[in-house]
Every structure is written in structure tokens, then in C-alpha cells.
Length: 544
Image (cartoon, rainbow, N blue to C red; front, side, top):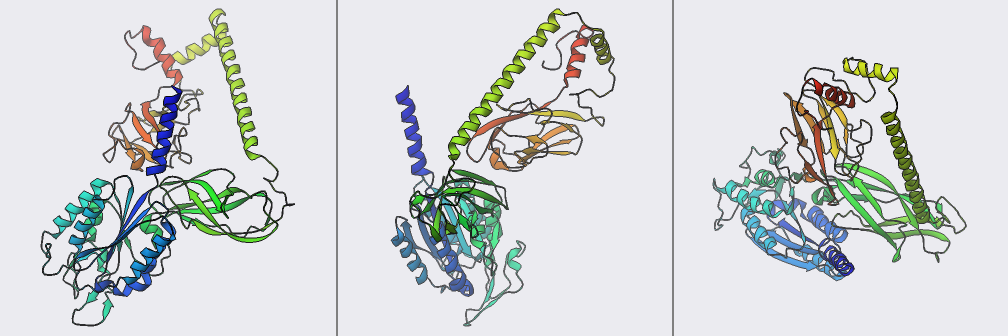
């Protein structure tokens, strides 16, 4: 049995290290003359920034271009700095000289190229173009009413493959083939899907709205001076490095800022911080960032024992686990080191303190549980053999009479038609008071999620805030997922009549649980119904 477990663990480690972090980065670049105003100052910078800051050893980079027809430019698997330099040199050779833009042929070529790549890697496609289909006379996709159908068919194939596609659209240009200059179209009509045909020197069609709608991806519009454009393109979180730290000891804390530019929550697992090839991260850190949000995190650092006193402005590199990456991975850490300086972490074995605190915590919990069990047994024994007191008889009469006075643990409905709903979570403790028990009225929304959610709380596994909502309409309780990636089994926009229906939840780590909503009956009402079973014989309408 032990050998079997060891073999399984070894296999999982091998699979994780072999497949989890490899990414194929494929860029499709428009090299037609309409891209000339943005080429040297923008496109080269964007691609170079992605190559230099986001590629890691084991990743692959592929560059395809298109104008009159699509072309293969370069493909490299990153092993050292030499591969990065080969990519940058090839980018510098590209020039926007094409007279036409055969967008549909380029998309078809892109799909076939990526489909032939090894399947054991993440595929990240980046498309840089003005979105116009203006093919040459010999193209197999001439301008016609079928252009939309052609591009939608190719885009549907990409979506079925599950590839991540980023669409970057540059402003349309008025281009006259007989002229030697290119001028910008100030109307900015490219942002509207209503304008299928461009009323300029080009007779092409803007097909980007159909591509974006089919892939369910947003179009990132180029804006001059937008320093966050690369983060919006790739969806990679941004790291803001700490300000000068002043004088520190061997152990200290530095505050990093992490910014999520995407529309989905991001979970980062920081496993090491390298300074001169030494890992100075005191303990691994997990950072959850909500969509379009940021978080500042104090990171505990531990300098090597042989570190010398003095001023340092050193380059550090952050290493993350899994396929989620943040950049720039490298930045500067400025501080003055004094070995005599003592601070919060100096001279303290923080892991030993943490382990000790956890042991004490569990001991306290165990003692509390034992006391509660003994107390419950004692109370049950007394109630079984003692004669009922007068107060108990009065309380029984009071409950049976249906008095409307407030009783602890009993939630009263405010309006006719209201229902009280309890959310149960698999393996999550239900003895948390009335935290997950709430009244639902017609038209009222109640949020579901992790820490920060106002109503139904999932704390057994980490999730984002408000990943779903519960709403009652015309007496029917509906479940509406807001972050669909947490609910892979739900294919519809919402789950109709969700009471007593198990709903599977999977977080960003792949850890899953199950939630279920049921109408809640207070202990008082249950007791009343049990008492009335003598009057209305038969199976009760609730579980007890």
C-alpha cells in the first residue's frame, strides 16, 4: 500500500512539473500598411515587453504575420537568453509593407498552426490588427456577404479548443494606395459593430465584433500612453515593488502590491524570492485578487546568515507556482542592512511559533468540545429522570398556543410569501448561529461567496466574494452564478427552482465542495409540528 501511495505521489509531482507551467505564446501580427503609424513605437514595444518580461524557461514563443497572405516568422522554446535575442532580432526585421489585409486567411492559418502544436501546454493567442478584412484579388476569401459566416466558423473552432485569445484593435486608417502618406480616421467608428463596411480609402469590412462575440472575449482598444496595455492584453497581474525600506535586520517584512487587470479572480502562489540566487522568502504566500482590483501584501523575508552590513539596491526575482504569473518578475529591493538591528521577526523561529500556536489552538478546541459533550449528556440525563417543573409546563403551553412573541433561534417572516432559506456546505460546520440562514422576499437578492459576502458564506474552501446570488421571483428561488468558473456543471444563465438541488463548487485551486439550499424550519416550529402529529397523523413534512 505504501509503495502504491508513493508511486501516485511521484506521478502527480511529475505531471505538475511537466505540464502545469508550460505556455505556448502565439502572436498574430498585422503587417499591412494601415499599421504603419503604430509599428516602430508601439507594436515592437508591446511584443518586446511580452518576450522579455513574461516568457519563462520551458515556454514557447511563436510569431506569425499577415498582410496579403499569412506567413510563419519564428518559433522558439525558451531555454536561455539566446532564444529571447533571436525573437527580438526577428521582430526588428518586420516592416508594415503589405497593400492588403486578408484577415480570414490569417485566422484560418492561425487555427491550423496552433492545432498542430503539442497538446500538453497552455495556449495563449494574441492578435494585433485593426480588424479589417481587405483581401487581395486572388484571395480564397474575397469580400462578400459570406465573410461573417467564414470568420465565425473559424472563431467557433478556436473557442471549442478552449484557447485563451486576446484581441487588440488599432484605430482604422484612411489609406489611399496611390498616396505615400497614411492619415488617422478621427471618427473612431471602429468601436461600433454597426459599421460593417469602412467608409474610407479601404473597402474592407471590420470583422472584429463577430470574432469577439463568438470567442466571448472583449476587444482591447489601443490607447496611446496606456502603460497597462500589456497587462490588459495578457491578463497577467502586475507587481508593484516596495519603496525603500530603510534599515532592516536579518528578518523583516516588505509590502508588495499586486494588481489584477482581468475580469476574473486571480490566485497567486508565491514560492520563492531570489536575491543573488538565494531564496529570501521566509514562507510561501498565497494572494487572492478580485477582478479589476488590487491588494497590498506584507511578505516576510529572511536574509542569508553570511549577509554583510551595508546599503543594498539589489535585483530580486519572484517565482510563482502553477500557470498564473505576475510581472515584472524582476524588480529592485532597496534597504540598509544592519545585523545588530532587531525587529519583529529577528531571532524568532516563526514556523515553530506558528506550529506551537496551532497545537494550543486545537487543544483548546478539543477541551471545549469535551466539555460541551459532557454537559449535553448531563442535561439529557436530568431531563430523562427529573419531574417537569412548572416553568417547563408553562413554556410548553406557550409554544403550543402559537404565541408571536420573539423566541431566541426563531426567525420571523416579515411579509406573506416570504421563505427562510438555509445554505448547507459539504463538510462545513453548520453550528455558526444563523450566519447562513436568511429570509427571501420576492425580488430580493442575497449574495453567495467567501469572506466579505453579506449573506450566504462559504469558508470551508477559499473563493472570491459574491460568486453567485440567490433571488426569489414569483415564489420560485433561483440560483444565479456571477463567476461561472466556480460552477462548471451549470451551463445555463441561472438555475431555476434551486431548493434541495446540490450545486458543485470548484475554486481556483481545483478544490471542490457542494452547496445546497433548503427551506429552514426553526426548532420551535419543529417542536410545534411534532406536538401536532397527534392531531394530524401521518409522515411529517420535514426532516427531524
